[in-house]
Image (cartoon, rainbow, N blue to C red; front, side, top):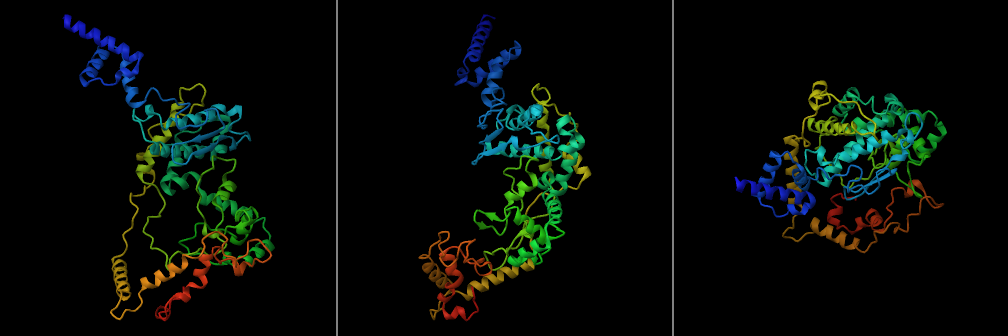
Length: 463
């Protein structure tokens, strides 16, 4: 009995020392830790266990107002997050709610705090089962939270967000969003980029005159050409007028030059400025808006082998439902707007009963006939261009000759002195549009072909 009392006394003293100085945990044996656990449970004293749990998980030491990856102060209107290689910036003061006031207005302080706590909850060990997750995983969760915040902000009017804050963000709202995820993919499900872009351009086109559209068509006739059905994502009522309107908005301007494919950043601003946290959103680059045909880096386009069909797999829906539930960390906060309590219906299982979810996988199996014909053609091509006993020039010889001569040509921007700047008096859209801006590029366009041997020129090579 005396021995047991002595052991209990030493364990109690050890617990007190650990509570006072957490570094006393270092170097403890498994047997000692077991004694601490048994003593703590028997005496209903969990102080040391809290320290041990926090030592291994950070579960109690996490600061949800100032996690280590938040470079800004919690109340700041501009957040800089350093979870990835490139810092991500959130401009809270660029969003307006349905009452015309900014999200950062004092009237909406609790709603703003709810969004902020929702983001910091993504990396909180207490919300991750006591696990410390890596920066990449935390970043992906934060990106999902921002997307879900945007889903709320984009429906500000329907939710009467300014008046009721998160009270109308209930089961029905999230099931509607998740159903869109399942049907169109999580990106289009939140932002509905194609739908919003078509609506914006169809409406804007009504205010564009025929003469403005004609002027652009004469300068860039490519906008009148038909686009392959599998490449077109929009069904614009008047494509030429849509491009003319975008041109007027500066969609194609890159400094003093023209960007023929347009700017997805500018499109994001036209669609979402003031409506959501639109910065850093990567929008599609629609071929319908291109001012000239895209350059091919190879003679033929590559064979598509990715599944580009719309929809979302069940695992992704599950991740989003878990992220949605993090908003409920605001339920007990006095400085944040309380959300509606979500039911078990907000789950991937329930969504799978409403919509057919996409099957997992990314690579399509190409037809065997195509694959074997392709292998045969590659073999025959290689065989045809092998060195012969007669010592004729090979394809490799030709390539090395071209590359050797090309090394002396400059690759600096604007090093092609024959191409005038755009805009300038000497600029001619038809003559200079496709001319390379580098000396080396222009050499390949015009003079490189003359370096080929007559043997290959006679084979019909023109470029």
